[in-house]
Amino acid sequence: MNNKLESGDCYANEVGEAFRALVPVSMVRATYGVATVYVTADAVDKGKKAAAAHGDGPGRTVKVAAAVVDTFVWQALASVAIPGFTINRVCAGSLYLLGRTTKWPLPVRKWTTTAIGLSTIPFIITPIDRSVDLLLDASLRKIYGGGEKQD
Image: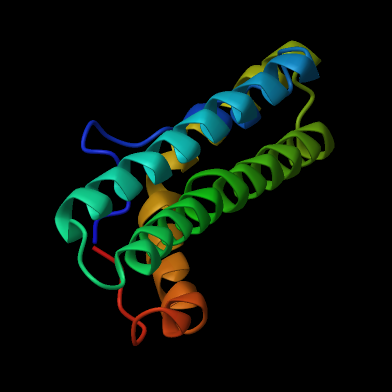
C-alpha cells in the first residue's frame, strides 16, 4: 500500500524545523499542526477507501480499522516524528559547528543552517520511509495481516 496521499507528501514540519533558527518557535509548532492535519486526513482517506473496497462483507470493520491505524502510525512516524527530529538535530548540529569553526556573523550562520536543513530533506525521506515500513512490518502489521501493508 502506498501510505501517502496521491497529491504528494507533506513536508511542513521539516521546513518548520529548518527555519527554527530564524522564526519564532510558535511558527515551528504551527507547522506540526499542519502536518498532523495531513496525517489525520490521509488516515481518514484510507479508511474511506477501505470501507468502499470491503462493502458490507465480513471483517469490514477490522479491515477499515487496520487501514486507518496503519496509515496514521506510518504517517506519524515517517512524515512527522522521525523527519522532524532528524532535521532538528541536523540544524542544531550545523549551527553549533558553524559557531565553533567559523567567524561568520550569527545571521549568516542561521541562514546557512536553514539552507542545510532544507537541503537535507530530500535525502532523508526514502531511508525513513523504508525504515518505518520495516518497523511496522516487524511489529504492528503482524497483528492485522501477516506483516504486509494494508490496502
